[in-house]
Length: 154
Image 1: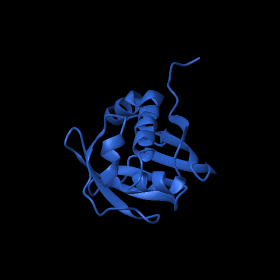
Image 2: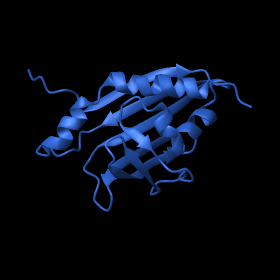
Image 3: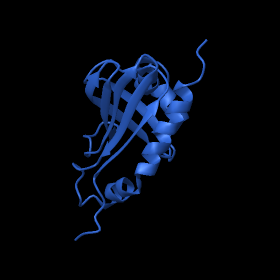
Image 4: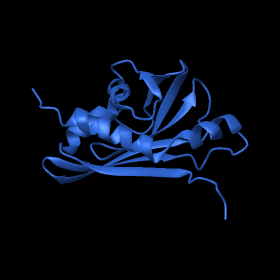
Protein backbone atom coordinates (compact mmCIF):
# COMPACT_ATOMS: atom_id res chain seq x y z
CA UNK A 1 0.00 0.00 0.00
CA UNK A 2 1.24 3.49 -0.84
CA UNK A 3 0.64 6.90 0.64
CA UNK A 4 0.75 8.42 -2.85
CA UNK A 5 -2.20 10.82 -3.21
CA UNK A 6 -4.59 10.50 -6.12
CA UNK A 7 -3.36 12.36 -9.16
CA UNK A 8 -6.92 13.10 -10.29
CA UNK A 9 -9.01 15.15 -7.88
CA UNK A 10 -12.72 15.90 -8.35
CA UNK A 11 -15.39 17.81 -6.53
CA UNK A 12 -19.02 18.36 -7.52
CA UNK A 13 -21.98 20.34 -6.28
CA UNK A 14 -25.31 21.65 -7.44
CA UNK A 15 -25.59 25.36 -8.10
CA UNK A 16 -28.92 27.20 -8.23
CA UNK A 17 -28.24 28.94 -11.54
CA UNK A 18 -28.53 28.11 -15.24
CA UNK A 19 -25.56 26.35 -16.84
CA UNK A 20 -25.10 29.24 -19.28
CA UNK A 21 -24.59 31.77 -16.47
CA UNK A 22 -22.12 29.52 -14.65
CA UNK A 23 -20.23 28.75 -17.85
CA UNK A 24 -19.76 32.47 -18.55
CA UNK A 25 -18.00 32.85 -15.19
CA UNK A 26 -15.66 29.98 -16.05
CA UNK A 27 -15.05 30.74 -19.74
CA UNK A 28 -14.15 34.39 -19.01
CA UNK A 29 -10.71 34.21 -17.37
CA UNK A 30 -11.06 37.77 -16.00
CA UNK A 31 -13.81 36.41 -13.69
CA UNK A 32 -11.84 33.41 -12.41
CA UNK A 33 -9.64 35.11 -9.75
CA UNK A 34 -12.74 36.37 -7.94
CA UNK A 35 -13.96 32.83 -7.21
CA UNK A 36 -10.75 30.75 -7.27
CA UNK A 37 -10.61 28.67 -4.09
CA UNK A 38 -7.22 27.10 -4.78
CA UNK A 39 -5.17 30.13 -3.68
CA UNK A 40 -3.64 30.29 -7.12
CA UNK A 41 -4.95 33.12 -9.33
CA UNK A 42 -4.20 36.81 -8.94
CA UNK A 43 -5.62 38.26 -12.16
CA UNK A 44 -6.43 37.84 -15.82
CA UNK A 45 -7.05 40.64 -18.28
CA UNK A 46 -10.52 41.11 -19.72
CA UNK A 47 -11.29 40.22 -23.33
CA UNK A 48 -9.97 36.64 -23.18
CA UNK A 49 -13.28 34.73 -23.15
CA UNK A 50 -12.59 31.28 -24.60
CA UNK A 51 -14.65 29.79 -27.44
CA UNK A 52 -12.87 26.71 -28.79
CA UNK A 53 -10.15 24.11 -28.42
CA UNK A 54 -6.84 25.80 -29.16
CA UNK A 55 -7.74 29.16 -27.59
CA UNK A 56 -5.15 30.46 -25.13
CA UNK A 57 -5.73 32.77 -22.18
CA UNK A 58 -3.14 34.32 -19.88
CA UNK A 59 -3.32 34.52 -16.10
CA UNK A 60 -1.08 35.95 -13.41
CA UNK A 61 -0.63 33.74 -10.38
CA UNK A 62 -0.48 34.97 -6.79
CA UNK A 63 3.29 34.40 -6.86
CA UNK A 64 3.53 36.83 -9.81
CA UNK A 65 4.26 34.19 -12.45
CA UNK A 66 2.47 34.34 -15.80
CA UNK A 67 0.77 31.27 -17.25
CA UNK A 68 -0.55 30.58 -20.73
CA UNK A 69 -3.55 28.26 -20.57
CA UNK A 70 -4.38 26.29 -23.72
CA UNK A 71 -7.94 25.04 -24.12
CA UNK A 72 -7.88 21.29 -24.84
CA UNK A 73 -11.58 20.44 -24.32
CA UNK A 74 -14.50 22.69 -25.12
CA UNK A 75 -18.24 22.33 -25.45
CA UNK A 76 -20.07 25.65 -25.12
CA UNK A 77 -22.06 25.79 -21.91
CA UNK A 78 -21.06 22.26 -20.84
CA UNK A 79 -17.30 21.61 -20.61
CA UNK A 80 -13.99 23.42 -20.71
CA UNK A 81 -10.50 22.21 -19.81
CA UNK A 82 -7.06 23.75 -20.13
CA UNK A 83 -3.39 22.95 -19.72
CA UNK A 84 -1.37 25.71 -18.03
CA UNK A 85 2.24 26.34 -19.06
CA UNK A 86 4.99 28.86 -18.56
CA UNK A 87 4.96 31.48 -21.32
CA UNK A 88 6.37 30.04 -24.54
CA UNK A 89 6.90 26.55 -23.09
CA UNK A 90 5.15 23.20 -23.44
CA UNK A 91 2.53 22.31 -20.85
CA UNK A 92 4.12 20.18 -18.12
CA UNK A 93 1.07 17.91 -17.80
CA UNK A 94 -1.57 19.14 -15.39
CA UNK A 95 -5.12 19.91 -16.44
CA UNK A 96 -8.03 21.90 -15.00
CA UNK A 97 -11.52 20.84 -16.14
CA UNK A 98 -15.05 22.14 -15.53
CA UNK A 99 -18.12 20.11 -16.50
CA UNK A 100 -21.69 21.40 -16.25
CA UNK A 101 -24.81 19.25 -16.31
CA UNK A 102 -28.12 21.14 -16.36
CA UNK A 103 -30.62 19.71 -13.87
CA UNK A 104 -33.37 22.11 -14.88
CA UNK A 105 -33.72 25.68 -16.06
CA UNK A 106 -32.23 27.13 -12.87
CA UNK A 107 -30.09 24.33 -11.42
CA UNK A 108 -26.80 22.84 -12.59
CA UNK A 109 -24.46 20.14 -11.34
CA UNK A 110 -20.88 21.39 -11.69
CA UNK A 111 -17.81 19.14 -11.47
CA UNK A 112 -14.34 20.59 -11.07
CA UNK A 113 -11.36 18.34 -11.80
CA UNK A 114 -7.62 18.80 -11.30
CA UNK A 115 -5.67 16.07 -13.12
CA UNK A 116 -1.92 15.96 -12.68
CA UNK A 117 -1.47 12.37 -13.83
CA UNK A 118 0.64 13.45 -16.82
CA UNK A 119 3.18 15.43 -14.73
CA UNK A 120 6.71 14.06 -14.75
CA UNK A 121 7.21 12.66 -11.23
CA UNK A 122 10.85 13.73 -11.48
CA UNK A 123 9.78 17.38 -11.61
CA UNK A 124 9.73 17.70 -7.83
CA UNK A 125 8.82 21.40 -7.78
CA UNK A 126 5.67 20.89 -9.85
CA UNK A 127 4.75 17.62 -8.16
CA UNK A 128 5.05 19.26 -4.74
CA UNK A 129 2.74 22.06 -5.88
CA UNK A 130 0.31 19.56 -7.45
CA UNK A 131 0.19 17.54 -4.24
CA UNK A 132 -0.73 20.70 -2.33
CA UNK A 133 -3.92 21.03 -4.38
CA UNK A 134 -6.77 19.35 -2.52
CA UNK A 135 -10.41 18.50 -3.04
CA UNK A 136 -11.10 21.13 -0.35
CA UNK A 137 -9.64 23.75 -2.68
CA UNK A 138 -11.74 22.44 -5.55
CA UNK A 139 -14.84 22.57 -3.33
CA UNK A 140 -13.95 26.12 -2.26
CA UNK A 141 -13.84 27.14 -5.92
CA UNK A 142 -17.23 25.51 -6.46
CA UNK A 143 -18.69 27.27 -3.42
CA UNK A 144 -17.29 30.65 -4.52
CA UNK A 145 -18.52 30.05 -8.06
CA UNK A 146 -21.98 29.24 -6.69
CA UNK A 147 -22.06 32.51 -4.73
CA UNK A 148 -21.16 34.46 -7.87
CA UNK A 149 -23.61 32.58 -10.13
CA UNK A 150 -26.49 32.73 -7.67
CA UNK A 151 -26.38 36.54 -7.34
CA UNK A 152 -29.52 38.23 -8.67
CA UNK A 153 -29.09 39.24 -12.30
CA UNK A 154 -29.81 42.82 -13.38
